[in-house]
Length: 426
Ligand SMILES: Cc1cc2nc3c(=O)[nH]c(=O)nc-3n(C[C@H](O)[C@H](O)[C@H](O)COP(=O)(O)OP(=O)(O)OC[C@H]3O[C@@H](n4cnc5c(N)ncnc54)[C@H](O)[C@@H]3O)c2cc1C
Image (tube, rainbow, N blue to C red; front, side, top):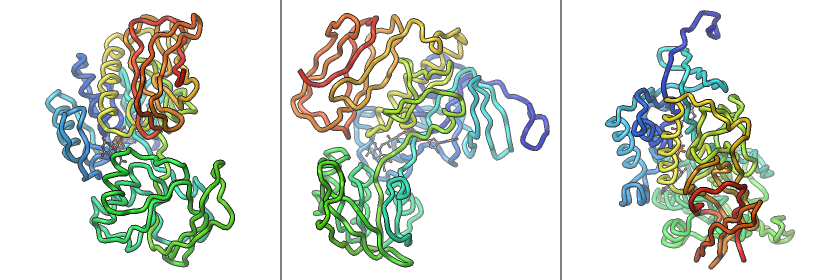
């Protein structure tokens, strides 16, 4: 093939190629090896494997995978070591630039531009953070405004003090964890402001990161103006009505030199789009079947690039399954019917459910586990799985508590051969 400079570049034939070495990608590579793939490599743009875990120096990871709570870097180290032991090859410092529907992968490595052809590909590129521009906060453009993950990187990995008085917009997990981290760094944390009437992060993080440190959480509030010339000087906060519109007259000024934004994560799907993968408007990630294969045969997806996970272990468990699916595909080069839509059924989010993954069920698939999130906090709620053609109820399960911030699970019992709806309520 021809490279960007017009020179001929040989195409390297590969087995299973995983893009991204976070908890999802590392587990996918292990899953592929366990399922018998003999040529498995992980391509990672960073110098070291681990993904976002490397900057999460707090503990709380690994409760389900390792049955103990460890820090992010420890989790990354264990999983990377398991991958090495399993015979996975790593190509770090290597950026995937392009992916085609027939699994040609163009990379920029230390050794230069290369082209690989994979038997199967697993997408595990994680996510990116929403920025000030995306949520359109009015005001000036001073220094001192960071996304929470960027601040975490500067503080935890580069030992940089980013300011003295902080305000946090958004109560997602990264914002909560960074509120505590800022307090550890000796900063005055003036408050966490959340536009929704409920916190957007895990309940344990609200308790451990804010409650234990006396950091106020103001719900149904947002920032309506940013002030400051060179450095941030203050933000104007206001309460919002049930339609999330600022209430006139409720504004007040909060002095601060640092604003952290924790206002949502977006699956990193530029490569998926290039390859023609169908994306879900509900998750921002690919639509997958129960093997985690996307609409493009031989391209699989897992972890935050598929849908945002609150717990790294779930990303890893998903990776194991996606890796096994990729190994099977690469071994058989299956003539797959996915793209034709034959022999498959859809799983729909019904009343009270924000989204469900996987979205596709192939004929004959047994005991499929579904991940879902509710549309709002719910207590003592029953969730059901109902056949759309027959009206048959396949499962009813009671949940003492369902929160949009915590992914929940429910399984389809046995083999179901019709479209299914997941719904909440009676
Ligand atoms: C601040 C923060 C705190 C968290 N705290 C906890 C916690 O306490 N407990 C818990 O269980 N979970 C926690 N999580 C959640 C958990 O860390 C994530 O769900 C998990 O890391 C997602 O894994 P991933 O492999 O999908 O993505 P990532 O970890 O983001 O990995 C994606 C990898 O893909 C690489 N990549 C992307 N594009 C390319 C490309 N084109 N070429 C090559 N490589 C590429 C990236 O460099 C990265 O290494 C936290 C998350 C954050 C952000």
